[in-house]
Amino acid sequence: MPGGPAESTAPEAWNLSFMTLEWVGDIDGALHILDQTLLPGSQQQRILEQPSDVIEAIQQLAVRGAPAIGVAAAYGLCLASRGCEQIEQVRERWDAAIAPMRQARPTAVNLHHMVDRMNRVATSPAAAELDGVSLRVRLLEEARAIEAQDQHFCRAIGVAGADLIPEGATVLTHCNAGALATAGQGTALSVLYQAWRNGKRFRVLADETRPLLQGSRLTAWELQKSGIPVDVICDGASGSFFQAGEIDLVITGADRIAANGDAANKIGTYTIASLARAHDVPFYIAAPSSTFDFTIDGGEQIPIEERDAEEIWNVSSRQRPAARIGYRNPAFDVTPASHIAGWITEAGVLKPPFLEIR
Ligand code: MRU
Image 1 (cartoon, rainbow, N blue to C red):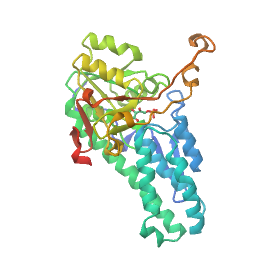
Image 2: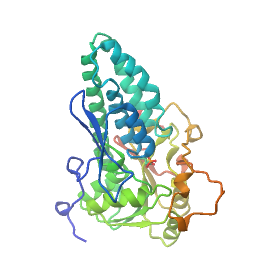
Image 3: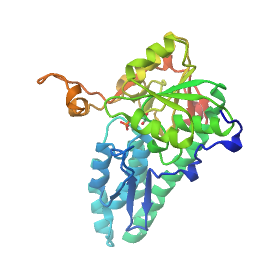
Image 4: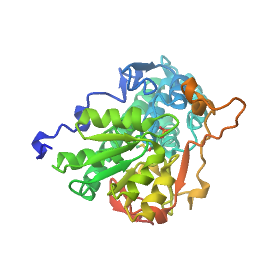
């Protein structure tokens, strides 16, 4: 394998060969997203012009991943008053947009934090002095600040975690916690990008991540573009790789982390964390402070999204089970803090009670 940081092809946050989301234009602009439902077969943009377009895109997982959902929601709220000039109309549209945007998906807390942050600006004493257009300018500024902050968090997470990757390691990841899941270079994958840039050489096992295949469709696509070697494995296969001593480290992202460190992430994460613990392999969560929910004490209070059963059975007809079978499709599970070796954040590799980011 080629060595040395100079030869690295890992993408910089400012030099990705794709864009996950981008606000195009001024206050009457629109949110452009890469439609992740079509990857990796087709790289197409979707243009979102109304809050309902953003909600639909979030629910369909056209834009997905906890930090990216938060940034998309912030811009989505800016779309509510598109074309409006009168302050009364701006406020009326804003008030109507807040609750549906906040409820677009239940588990990733970044969505709630960013909607609340935007609403604090809209309802601040300073905003009460503004006319309609000035308020819209201020709200767009805030959405841009949220995006820039997420990019900064991603880079800092990479720097904080890069030294955890041993030279020559095999790293297992689950779902997609990369540039496709954030406004920047990802969380779990940011650690890998930074380590690669630092000259470390390693390989990645990407769980396929049933039912929507974020691992095989998105993580493998993203890593392949970066030049980091990646193999996709079936979700059920990781146990045998642990048993064979082939996994040195696990890193995943998270959708919500409780005050005690319990972390919700894509369904199947707890299984891997349990295997990692059984085989004495360190399991890390990489997530920005915006993914922490200090209002809840433990993971049992994290709401878990149940998605449509069709996602499970909508596979090729040969793979479809018998008719009239029941399904359950929880999209996330909770990994207890006891299974987590460290929480890689923009403020360093932390442990509960996370005083550095409270
Ligand atoms: O249902 P998804 O694809 O939005 O789930 C995404 C995940 O579980 C990610 O691991 C998590 O949001 C962290 S993204 C940096």
